[in-house]
Every structure is written in structure tokens, then in C-alpha cells.
Length: 259
Length: 259
Image 1 (cartoon, rainbow over the protein chains, first blue to last red):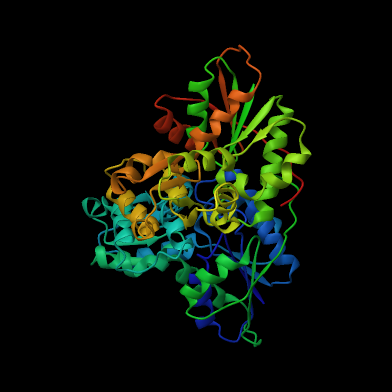
Image 2: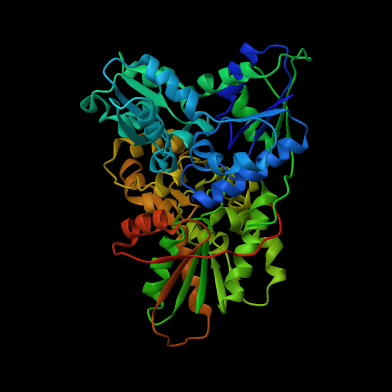
């Protein structure tokens, strides 16, 4: 069984890709809906919530975890990996690889939460690999609330305006690649793609899921269990929109002694 | 010293009114930014966060608390009042009084968070007082993220679209009064008022603040201290937009043994 973790529904974009790649595997998805959204919270709050969530998945018996949350991957994962004895995959490295394969002019834009942009995680990883890169982060604080509330239709004028609000300097910057650096954002890819035609969109959830192919192959039942840390109903409703079929989510109480 | 509590910056609309009414009083404002937004969370999560926040204010020595949060007032306050020995004011009762004074046709709409609308707190309180009322709740899940991210300009087309998205059935319903049943929403009153001219808007923060006039008069220094449970910087930035002057906020750690 493989664990997939996100603050809310965003990681379902990674789960979808992971199930396509590994159809016989069992997955345990955990959405920390008690603390969503992570993107504006302080780095130490994100660290605490991520640690609690990863411990929950470990105790449930997963053999590896995909941290399908850009904010947690960028700010908490480097400090947390040493605390766990199983493989923990983040989204930064594989997304950066995919972006570098796609760019021709080395101008790469990163759409992410405020905290991920501030962390500089994507920009540093890009520059480490390729000195010619010019990277620029675009904080998109409204995207997660829009996705969590099911505003996903590419023809929705409200979504159109929010995208232009956050990404309008993209053309001036001249990017030929846009990293969707929060796993909620690939759920808006159709809408973003329609506005910024000709810019290659890098789906961080999909890129991250490919890492799971490195695990020893195993034939399980191809099942998926969904757990959340608060009310499951909103999660179930949005998940149905995203996955195209109904799911049941259980509410669980990961232990955490801190506020 | 009087305590004012909200999940985030919304309660500043009540604080502004309270300082106008009681200019010589000291105020301690607490924004539970570690858990904002409350509006989509489960009732028991809201109860726990509200209890922790009220305890923090009590321990800091306030003599009364204004719960300037619609979601907490609607879902948690009825269960929590008995746990505290100081007066605790919510926003439901005074807002309902103001709405009943303003309506002529007894059709009253309530704009609030999802959880507040589900609680039926405003509708029940209206019907208790006036049997002729027809009340209808409109969940507005995007308003809190918009306010928390400083999208406040009444001419902002994004804000305009979000308002129409959430409130468009208002005209068909025929309301002559709209309760802004979350203290974040009065910060959007200019924008809402421009779209729904002729509908009286009830500012729940202002209505709630008038209750503080019932406290024994006291001359203090007219100072205000701001505390938050997570990163103070975003709070300070949005507070400056709302209050029209810069403030400093301290980060505090209210004790809570639960996740």
C-alpha cells in the first residue's frame, strides 16, 4: 500500500496519475482538511501538520509516501525525510526535471502558493540543474479556495479572472513553460491552458507520481482508501467532481499534541 | 480590557465599530489564523478552536469577549457560554434585531459561510422573534478567502463576479434586507451594495459591537493589542488595508491538546 498526502483535494491529481501508472497497487490517501489551506500558513505550522500527517500514514502501514502537496514538499519535506524509514517522495525534483525537458528558452514560470514561492524551492532546484534558467514565481492564493469549492469549469468567467489576476505578467516574462507547483493547480489546467496557449504546463501531481515506478513491483487489489482529518462530506463532493466517480472518505484523528 | 475574537481579519470590522463606540477602552484582538477559514470546517473542529481561543483571551485578563465570528457564534457559542464566567457576546442576536428593524416585506436573506447557513442559527433567531419572516441563507464560501487575500476594491471585476455567483438568487427571492452574517463580509459591503441597490445591508460586526455598551463604563488608555495564532505578517498586511493604518501583531500559542 502506498500513501498519498495532501492538505486537501489537490493530491487527487497525483492519485489519478498514480493509479494509471500502477493499477494493481493499493493506495491510502490522506487529506489534512482540518488545516487546509497550507499555502498561507507559517513554515513551522506546515512542518507540524506535515509531520503529523506522515506519521498517520506510516502507522497505517504504507510502504512509501508521495507528498502530493507543493507547499509541504517545498517547506517541510527537506527537514522531515530523516525522521522516517520509508521512501518519501516530494513534487519538486520530478516537476523540475519535466520543466527542464519542456523549455526551449529557459524562462520558466512557477505558479504556486504564497509560501512555496517564498521558499524558492522550485527556483533553486531549477538553477542547480541548469544555470541558463531564468525562473520566476507567481503566488496564486485564490486557486486553492477555488478548487476546494469546486470552481473548476474552464469556461467559468470567475475562474478566468482569477487566473488572469495571478498570472498576467507571464507573457511579459516570456515563459514558455509554466510549472503548476501546487497539486491543486493541475485541476485548473484546462482553464489556464486556454488563456496561455503556447505555454507548456507542467502537472506537478503527474510528474511526482512517476517516481512511484521506482518502488518494487507488487500486485495488490488496486483499491483506494480515503481519509481526512475533518468533515468528509465536502471532500467527497469535490473528489467526485475531480475523479468522475463517487468515493467514501473516513474521518480520522491523527494525534498531535501541539496547537 | 475587552477581548474580540475572530478566525482571521473579519472581526476587525467589529473592532473598528467597537473603538468608535468605546474610544477609551482597551481591546485585545485575537485572530485564530492557524485555523482560518472556519466556514467549511466541521462543527466539532469549530467548537474546539473557539474554546481554545476564548480561553486564551480569558487568561490574558479580558473582562468580556465579543465573538466577532459568524461561524463560531452560530455553531459553538451556545455550547460554550456556560464554560466561562465573563460575558460573551455573539453576533446572531443583535444582527437579527437590526435586520428586523430594517425590513418592510419580512423577506430577509442571510449571506454567511457554509457552516453558518447549515446551522440555521440566523433563520431560527429571526423566526423566534417574528413569525411573518421568510428567511433564506446563501452560502458564500469564496468571500473569506477573497477578504483574507485583500481583494476588497468595490470596482474589482473578480469580486463583482464572486458576489453575483453567491448572491444572484437574491432578487428572485425578493429580500429587502441582506444580513452580512460573517464579519468578513461587511468589508465587502461597498461592492455588494453597488450590485444590490435598494437592499439594506446589515453589518453583523457593527451590530454586535453595540452590545459592548452594556458593560460597566471604564476609562482606559484606548489601546489595542493584536494577537494571532500563526504568521503575523499576512494578518498585518490585510489589517492595514482594512483599518487604514499600520498595526503590529504578535504571534501567540494558545494551548490545545487536541489535533
